[in-house]
Amino acid sequence: MDIEKELNEELAKSLRKVGEVWAPWRSAYISGPKKDGECVFCAKVKAPSGSDRENLLLERGKRCFVCMNTYPYTPGHVLILPYSHVETLDELDEETYAEFFALLKKWQAIVKKSVGAGGLNIGINMGKIAGAGIAEHLHMHIVPRYFGDTNFITTCADTRVVSKSLFDIYDLYLSNINSKEEK
Ligand SMILES: [Zn+2]
View 1 (tube, helix red, strand yellow):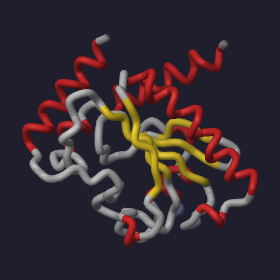
View 2 (cartoon, protein in one colour; view 1 turned 30 degrees about the vertical axis):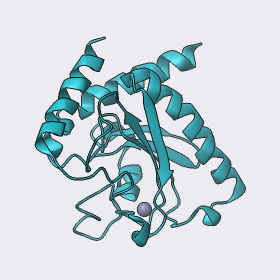
View 3 (cartoon, protein in one colour; view 1 turned 90 degrees about the horizontal axis):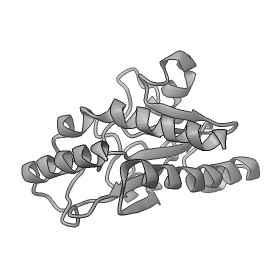
View 4 (cartoon, protein in one colour; view 1 turned 135 degrees about the horizontal axis):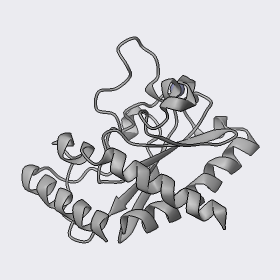
């Protein structure tokens, strides 16, 4: 499986370059909100669906959406978000809450299958003090873990190493979601 090999090589490269302690729930977006003050997550949704690939937006649901993390902790890092720009889980209405977790169930399977992860870290940083990079827009992380990454390490300090294959992984995810839906 070529992509698996590629991911492992990438991971090995990033491991060589970083030396901090793995901080699982650190900021998703180191750079924070966009300069004009617009929420980067809301901006992805507002953009025309024709630019979904460019925005790494994987799925538009009824009330929630799924995208890739532009600054992944590990290759294949995915985020699940409500369309509504809210900070906490209890602000979600029942339908949104249900879809949020339905998408989690669906996407943890797609992620695991697509990138050959040995395991996953799944979680939410609710609030700045809990490490949320963009605390004002709730998001859940699905972080693939790979054998050999147990000492890992930061938010991939050298993001270039990882971002090179962001679109490859995006395409892989889409092909797997489509093949699943055809069944
Ligand atoms: Zn937002």
